[in-house]
Amino acid sequence: MTLTPDDIEAIVLSVKVAVVATLCSLPLAVFVAYVLARWDFWGKALLNGLVHLPLVLPPVVTGYVLLLTFGRRGWIGEYLEQCCDLVLAFRWTGAALAAAVMAFPLTVRAIRLSIESVDPKLEQAASTLGASPFMTFVLVTLPLSLPGILAGTILGFAKALGEFGATITFVANIPGQTRTMATAIYTYTQSPTGDEGAFRLTLISIGIAMLALLLSELCARHIHRKAADL
Amino acid sequence: MKIDFTAKHKRKDFTLDMALSFEGPVTALFGPSGSGKTTVLNILGGLLRPQEGRIVVDGEVWFDSQAKIWVPAHKRRIGYVFQDARLFPHLSVGLNLRIGGWLRRSVRAKDKRSNVEWDDVIDLLGLNQLLARKPGTLSGGEQQRVGIARALLANPKVLLMDEPLAALDEARRAEILPYIERLQSRFAIPTIYVSHAREEVERIADEIITMKDGSVVGVRRGSDFSL
Image (tube, rainbow over all chains, first blue to last red; front, side, top):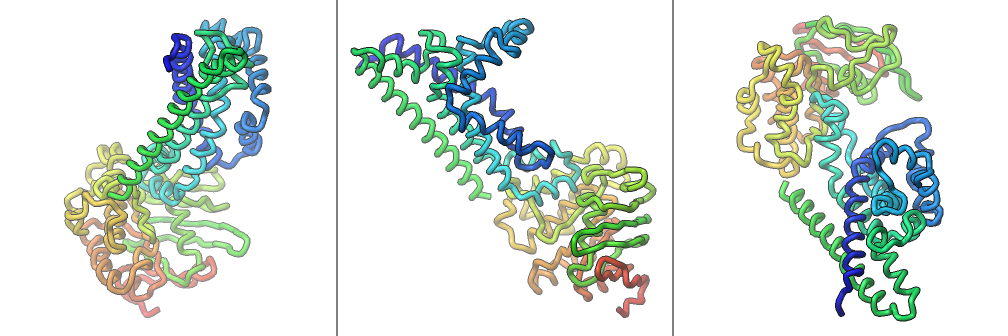
């Protein structure tokens, strides 16, 4: 079994898209998770719903909404192109955006749960020592919810790696530009002679996903061991 | 130092209503559980904002409901010792202790006269052997000693202690009480001490405020502690 140059291109692109999507959305995911876990405000249910929407919508709908807003004629897309020379539609950057949006609810959910499990009494203790809300977050909440943040990141990465529906709707399936592993497998399955190629990439997909899960398990163990040393 | 404290706070089944000056140096808030002692402490510490009232500590207004002033906890120079210690489980004892001084480093730089020195605190509370340990490996009594040291090293103007001995057994209590007594002679930080244990309060306090159902029912000062 040998990989063709196109296969390798798809694999590299998939990993690049997933890494960029995960890392760029992580700070926002942590912030939103914190807001949902700790703040009480009008419209919280609305924000929660909005964050979870990509989880329950058909991915093709999410992709189409992205096309309407971030496409070259979409109101955000047009602005981004004018101000920052950034085009998302039918580019790998758009694939990263689609993957990030689709992975966001999973990441936020995991992080929110772990922030909620941090005892607010410890945060109070930090404030009596002179820690502003931000410093309290950095010194207490963030380190204590690190295992959950890690789990959420891995989960989001796995989701981003396999994203298909929103990606193909928003950025199509252009070889070398937006053809990720998932869309490449889809392309193979559309051709009568594509079985072998589809199988190759399927194995690679499983391999990368397993590797990510193993890595997260190792990290989690490391954190637990450190916690046990305490 | 004088603390003027006026607060009204209503919850479903409890109303706090008190107006009083704490003269200290060690003031005990004494009374049965549910009498509002901890509520007073939380209000003083900035952890609970009452519906109405005014708090002035050493000339600084921390709370004034009419003027809409509320200084949040982290901007009040307090040290808070909790009943359940509340040490940060992910940090070593040493870091737990250093965090307050670091967060208030600008205060320490400005007001050197009132600085609490590291060696004094570690020495007084006997913490030298514990610095590298993690809070989870400490006994209840050791945790509370670290909790007291952590509050002191945050350079407080007022030390707030919420039943620091209540979670400990008799032997541990007898172990910690002398440390708390020594605090005063060493650092002379005005202290508000919440407790429901009469013998503790009589041993430590210069002033005993007895509370019941959210109100003050008795104030005793000096040596007249025949409660």
